[in-house]
Image 1: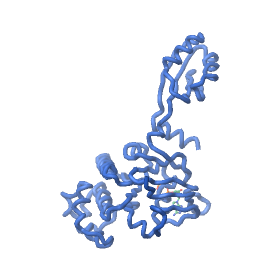
Image 2: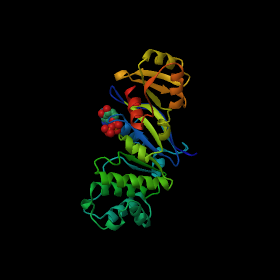
Image 3: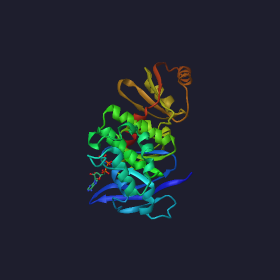
Image 4: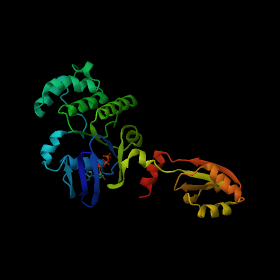
Length: 299
Ligand SMILES: Nc1ncnc2c1ncn2[C@@H]1O[C@H](COP(=O)(O)OP(=O)(O)OP(=O)(O)O)[C@@H](O)[C@H]1O
């Protein structure tokens, strides 16, 4: 698979603050990546560095095959990292004509990109009459004009109402389905879950996880258990091949984490054969949100 972007130990310090700390990951063609982290975790700084607007303190990054200057490589990148900025008293279409002139691309693509973002019917309207969601969609259209190899978006749904958020996410999914590589920064887990195939979780500039979104949730789950003979139950769990660890929670509840697939029925039978009567037995899997919170809390 073709590599679009490689980050190698990329680091940015602002005085004594390390905003991005030795970040390494690869962006492969055709995937949709989310950089996910709370506010202030270093997402925008990371995007700023690979887009040449923030100077790295150390480490490096490489666009495409590494044989191109960043300046030339960025001609193949469509990026929206600031709020959409166009001429207010010009129509969307005229604004895009101007962008075509600046980017030296043919203006025949304007209708097509406006169609992708559902703005073709409103192309004659002044930019100033657009809602925030429409402005953001126009920015996406503008970024698509020169057929980029990758689209980069920083918090693409920030400040939008639920309908606007939905429209932007649908557009991103549609563009991705057509094969576009996308890298977006977001502090919203559900956004990354809905839109991205891959996720890079960062906190305080440090990478906590990078990989497919599915695998972040690929654990075997856990049992919630209760028994009047808690000590005997704990002894059984201590030596159980399928139990990785267990915690005692409130109300005498024991949470036993699985290290391999194991059915509740089998555990129930085993407990019974060891004269341990369970008063509560539930098998559960952590939601992606619980996993994400655990991942970020542990650091
Ligand atoms: N120009 C700067 N000078 C000093 N500190 C900065 C500068 N830019 C960013 N920072 C700090 O670096 C850290 C990371 O900021 P960054 O904007 O990259 O985070 P973020 O994850 O994008 O968060 P947000 O979504 O809130 O923008 C923060 O603590 C921020 O205050």
